[in-house]
Image (cartoon, rainbow, N blue to C red; front, side):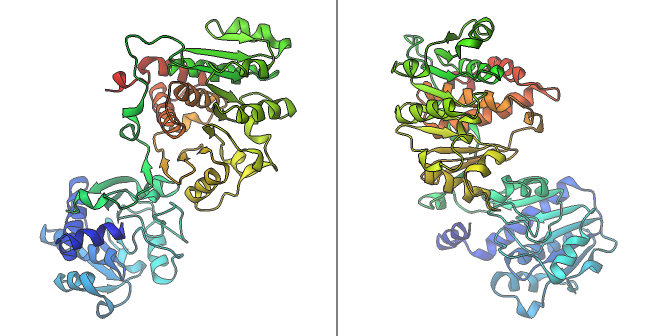
Length: 468
């Protein structure tokens, strides 16, 4: 974002004009959402504080009662922030909790997305005093790391956050996303052209990211052209593999075969009318090259049988999804995760920690895991992160908490495999499946069970024609 600002200035847009536009955008967003009330504007010593002075000036001009507090002195301000402070004709108080006395709304303009240290002193005391108040944050709530969404010391819970040009990872990653409240992205005059060559490698996971590469049904299509998914079935938890198999069908795979252990073959065969259920050895089923996508892990059991199947699938060069037990069998032997074809790993946080380090910067941790294994890694959660080995990543924000129930991850694994079988790359398939998974769950509502996701997927499919 700093580079985007620099490029905008280099294109001939004065940086002080961008600051004026930013502060006006915050003032406008605030006045659209709230009735007039006394406002306290808490300003920091940098450009975020400069934005705050602009907000104060515009609110006061509109007839609102405004108090301004500053961390430090006006004499210490520099550049555009100093110029905007000079345009404020009211009093400037020292920043502290007393600034908030009598305020109905607090504008948090202390620190923005670039904060890299924990809050302390007067800034922290003021932020802690914001709790329970109506807060409008500029860029991000102070104390939220814009790169990770983590809280550095303390942060208020904003009702509204106004950011500029593009959101940052901290607007999407937890807990930052929750602390931002409603997030508005304001156009402040930065031209779209500054994105060219900017090197952005992180995206919000929305349909425009992958829609053009969804499977397309052609008139001459037949079932083999739509891909054939092979799912490893477990001997005990048979429901997991069944969910994965049905999900692969629901997103459009032409054929699905489930490899069933012979003792439970009748369980699978009686429950899966349109899935090919076979008691043949997994290795022999894998030998058929028409089975171009594989799922190993759901309900498989954490044993050498699963390890053998996963190892064979990795060596086959086919598209592969490793989930649940198909992942945890590699605990303490992650280096064996060396696929010859495209592979997606779908751990939840507990499974991820068994295999890889997970630090405060979740995005960096997932990228490191993808680079280490050569796989696309999907760290599942309320802020699911999808990263490929090159470092390109997407953050998902549409998953409702109703997905926190056993079996929904099995559905996701099958969806990813089904899309890969139809020709999508591992990264695109993972992004599309994760978003569709969340959208289907939102459609179902509060009493969701995993089978409901399958019915919801049937309602609106995944083909490009239906998305259009």
